[in-house]
Length: 186
Image 1: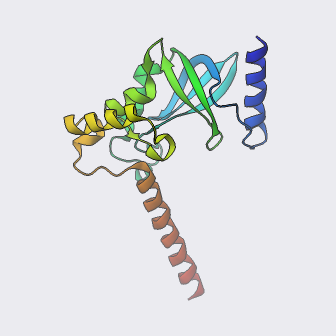
Image 2 (image 1 turned 90 degrees about the vertical axis):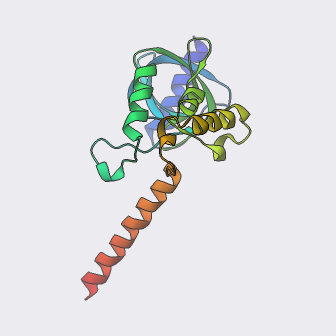
């Protein structure tokens, strides 16, 4: 019980003032998954507290229900797959000790054996996030398998990774802002 209270206190500190105070690498939390936002982010209810969790090692196509221009192909399907897999179910999350955009980063497990990160990659709902999990051979092999079987996002011959998609959107929006500034000067 003391451990749970310590975790909840650290989590509330992490998000209360926007700072990134996070839990130690390897800590486990358990709760009920709900409100799947997209293919790699969901809320976890722990002792009445809502904790936003970013799935470790997997990066799904971007999905914004209110903005089709910010949605990648296969983004909705990835979110639907994660929702079907975990929504309303008890999840254990092994935390990495990182925070990302006011989300705790962790590796979720459903039951005793289903690694959610690995499942999302293996079924073509997410890329292996090499930058954040470079030593995970199981993630690499799962991505290779999904590619070879043309599962999910790999049905597209040249899918655009979320990190490239986001940077293209930022560049595009940046050039629009530049054009607006130029037109105001003229």
